[in-house]
Length: 402
Image (cartoon, rainbow, N blue to C red; front, side, top):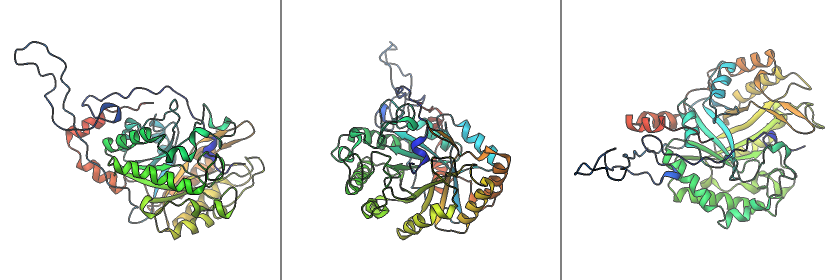
């Protein structure tokens, strides 16, 4: 049994659409560098004769600060596919939960025919709702359905050595420039669950080592720094347990250093009896050990993938207990619920909040306290307040690529 629901989530393979400059010509990667000035839109040569088209003025956007924890409590977040590409699923989740969220998490792979480009329009759909994007950025090819990939850990094209040696530098820089030019706060969660042997960036598969993971992470970070993408908040995220459970594959073997990490994170799921050979376990079973380790790093901690099934126990009681324990643990400063269904050839897991009326009601009650924050994080609120009317129109003109 693999240790994460994420490896089983569905991916939709669609053609990569060409990036289109918006009505006010926000310049993301495909449109060239952001500048200010330029001739008025539609101006003509002095003679009045029609000349070549004149580009409208390009409006530069300010850069947001990094996302910091709230002064008290923990931010609520959600993974609610197909958001952000169809952001109405965010609205639907908030209606079901009877409470808003501050963070929206989603996945994008590096495979070029599978939603691989940075999507400023998708981020804008999230920012406009008062939420910060958390993009889980994955160097692999999940195919049409990640649940059905054969031997997903061994994809030689995505070895860590290829990241380190510069093979992907142009692609990585395109993301850095895109995020920089869009301006708003983005939490970037690359190469998550690196201590689990089901992804091709794990240090025990695909010709990799944990040392190479650290080097690859630093390389990503350095390229973003060179491009000036200071609005990125770097999220280093482990699986709740290491697979294989060896000293060489321990959490600490993958930590790239304090200068390269802004938040730490962990994922873990209560599979109940919905997986092959799985059993019902409490929140503490999954989280006590990784939280104890992450606390030693003295960075904000996010539970980045988190959910329970109904089979094998009482999901409503599990949710009440989990969120009560999180409230008692000030080390946890954000928690992202994984509101999705996973299906493989041999099993199925429905992690969604609304699997039963009892589950829905328990979730609503569990997150209702003001301790669980639903407002925009300070970095987003400050950035939004700094925008001019022209800059707001630039953002409003953006549409998701996918």
